[in-house]
Length: 102
Length: 474
Image (cartoon, rainbow over all chains, first blue to last red):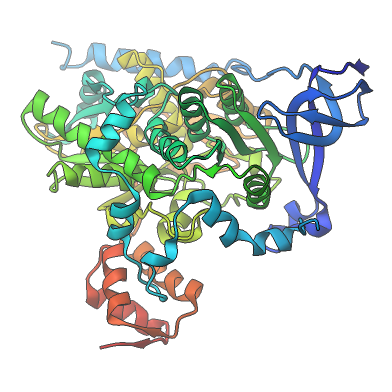
């Protein structure tokens, strides 16, 4: 997919390779690189996966691999958790039936 | 010539970068050994209470409502011994512009950065503080970068942290997202060096002093409403700033008899820097993974001397389980009509339990709430936990194993705050002060400092020091 100059995009970088990681990181973390993602406006037309330069919202120039155009927020309320329903039902019964219900 | 940007080289420039980025020369408060002049640091680099109230007031921060939780109090009394069950109140800090008490910290930090002529601010945080700094930067016209630990190596992110990134971007901030690891600090230092922005650290005197208005307000509101001070104030404890600032504010108001309780979610057994365990926890802050290390060694933060020193002010420290906090979050919505973020309800779960130890005419306060929404919500967190293989069920929360299951209490009577042995963490703090500084001779000044910093007697300090084989000035 082609991104055009000026598009809002997200880029990816490897900050530290597995070998460069800090001595205090636990074993499982040491096996993987430290990665970063940052968003900005694309400097030149490019395709996904290409090395590009962006200008971030604060005006920094950052280079990295193009990942996505118009990156979306995908977080939500998740799958419904039915257990939560039971809490309100239980608590309302407890308060309604008790001697505190004046 | 290009600067060496390797991990080792940047970390070696840490002190120089920090001095430039905070504008405080910490060395003037130092003794060269363990002790430093904490009160002088707070005095000379902070603001007076009146100044802070005015700074915060000008951006709509503070003066949040104090609400009595009558239905939760009635519920607690059902499980309390006869005559017990204190009145539970909550300070609705979600009413601040960015949705949490962190706006108080950020208002001061950003104001200070602007006063010193910085063009922008940077903060390293995955939590409410990032949103608070971004919101304040928007109001005060500074640029803002937030650095957050967000994803594991598979690119899966905690929904709560992703929501926080959205919120920061909504306020016009740049968000730099990283995978798991303490080297976030390296990226943070590089950004400070590159941009010459202000380090809006959570742990500067201005930030901590910003929370003093919360403690002060609490006391004033209680005197107006109830004609007296509260008996117990519960603060969710992670980095220690919330508790430190609130307690200092209470003291400034003259409410010195109030018992200050810290509460953290128990995440024992989960390693905070582990890539594999990152998404097996359901709380991103307010947990023991921060609370214990920062209480037992506050100077592990991103400034040379942290202004957040919770042991100085903490009378009691309790933990609650993830399931207990989720349950209370739902209870707050269902019984009190207040839908608030899970992390702020850590203290509420603790208060619900502690209220049952107190007399009915006593007052216990939860001193904060936070906003909630997509990603940052019990539905999102529990659903995410389930996707990550965590078992969710009703049962006895005592049996919860962090990273394996989340046990929602079968009934609210099972909610029970668990005491942390205060002497044990105080000893651990004194041990850390020796191990970190590598000091072999401890002066009277150091002993006096340790006694204040750990809130213990001089004899207690000496006894612990003797175990460390260091020479003590008698």
